Length: 305
Image (cartoon, rainbow, N blue to C red; front, side):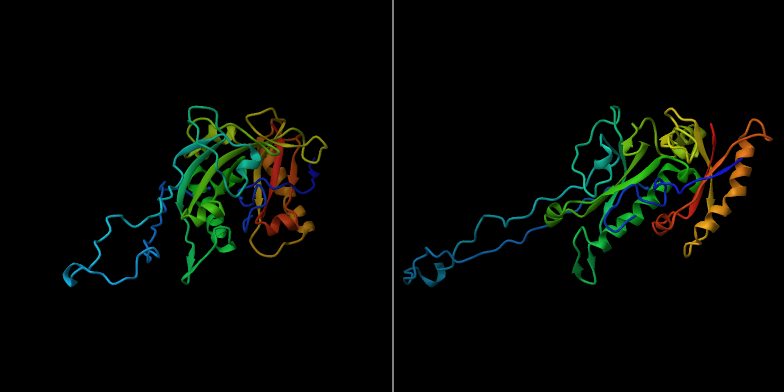
């Protein structure tokens, strides 16, 4: 019989993998890289060493010769390349900025850039800081949208996977020199605060059964068990997340309602994948009020795998 399980963690399409400025946690039809640049204005000044005595030149020759030196200009600030691969650790992947060098995509890597764009840092004629809430919220909306189009599959396929969108913007110092890009990457969470290496083509990967199986959400034990831990399905596991229980947007319905809402759907889903439809096990996780506020409006159904 099914067990009522404690609330689940924060690994999902609609929630962040970590706390970020103004966002909670891909997105993606045309991959475009836009380069931001700034130009500097030349200036002139009076040389204090110039004598102030009257000139003996004739009026026709008194004009100073034009300078042959071009006015200084700022060096254009390039946007990150796309596509590109990186070898990042978990903490690097969930940081708001990243300055790691790209690596060859034929070598071991844990992050793939699937989109780069330009930030809109001017609102009503005012220049906003790159780390402002308004600017960061642009990326927090854009990258997950483009992620969905990039990896493909249905919303449920993405919720049941360990693939996540992460995003980066320039540092404040780089922004001051003219950098105005954002970068969207895809990562695969292998386990708690650990990334899995990425292999093969990721565009449309969740539209395939093989991709859903490789990057699916599994666990090391039954939900609610002390040894329960989420892991990517390509590693050792004993249970698998098999479907979701979606809830409509709005205020949090309360723990009792979200807990009760998933009992029958999860039992039915587990019966469909069970070898013996008369004797089988299943589990259910429901969103907490905190997770609901972060955008997690669905529960997870689990079955032995």
